[in-house]
Length: 193
Ligand SMILES: Cc1cc2nc3c(=O)[nH]c(=O)nc-3n(C[C@H](O)[C@H](O)[C@H](O)COP(=O)(O)O)c2cc1C
Image (cartoon, rainbow, N blue to C red; front, side):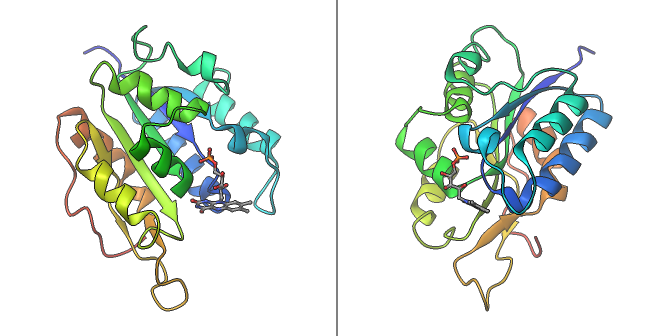
């Protein structure tokens, strides 16, 4: 069987980069070729969760190729058949909003547009404190959008962060495998993050 290639895009949910890298490694270990992509914020921002250059190094080490970090770099992903599906992990509230509104002004939203235009699956691994507030309408809209799939997610801290939700990153690979068959992994609202 032909080896499948996934775009693996990171947005600026910096506190979940550790989990995203773990899943990037797991996905590569499962035999997928990976094309790393980063939003401008993910590519350029150092935070208390780590330095951008270290995450870039790690992603390039796992994927064996340079991170795509420009709109021009992401544009050919779909039309040139560089990938079979796109994973956005982590996917911020900001990127959810742009995807829901059809805004394409980052490498990650360009990658999504590029894949959706030829009917490739786009898998969102969301992590945002406003999932049940400002982002709720965007999540709802994207759940009702063809070829978009969600890694199952749940409220991570209902008492302290009542509107927050985070995907169960451990479900990323099963979600990709289901999405490649045109199916949303269920239950999409899961028990734990
Ligand atoms: C330390 C830090 C942690 C952040 N964590 C999150 C997060 O978990 N989820 C989220 O939606 N935004 C988070 N943000 C905000 C995003 O980085 C911001 O909305 C940014 O515009 C996202 O751009 P992007 O979606 O293009 O990567 C965080 C910002 C900082 C500085």
